[in-house]
Length: 87
Image (cartoon, rainbow, N blue to C red):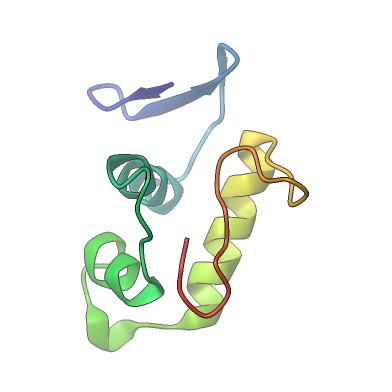
């Protein structure tokens, strides 16, 4: 559950304690549910600067977000990676 007004994310009723970037990333991914969000798009929207795009930063943030959400890679519960495309 994402509570935009409170800037909180709950997983099975428990606060996930997300950082600002993790919350913004999750919010954007949830807003685009059912579509693919490219890394470039996420850089523009979440980090607000396409020229500051750093692939390792996005990868690390997604990894931390997955861990806090209790997500798994096989199969993913919440965030699916499409290699070379996005999330």
